[in-house]
Length: 166
Picture 1 (cartoon, rainbow, N blue to C red):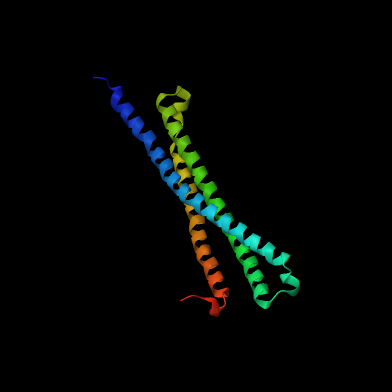
Picture 2: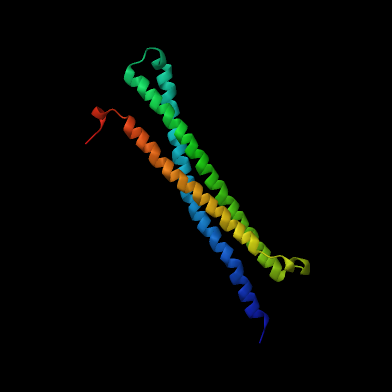
């Protein structure tokens, strides 16, 4: 019986653990990039509204409602830009985490089948670093969720009471 077969199976299993984390990070990135795009589109729309209000002379001779709206748009854009920064940091963290997990898989493979000098490399620190970076990304994502609620509260609270529906 070939004694290397069980060793090869164990090596493949060890290589697959970081690969599962790559897939998990991919799912997280999918949601993050979607939210990142939505927030960017909202900033663009609000900036266009701000430019329109300024072009129509709201700052100089506009109505009180238009001036209030301009102030609201400016505050929302500032808040959304902070959210974009949080989302960017979350995306970058997840990408770095994926890189760490890919490197870990590569190091495990080299440790099993590579030259003797590479067989002394311990891949565990790379995996742990990847987990830590993913945790940092999740923290940024959580902070964005809190900020998203604050942004919505700001928009709703600044809306005149007579204009609210139902």
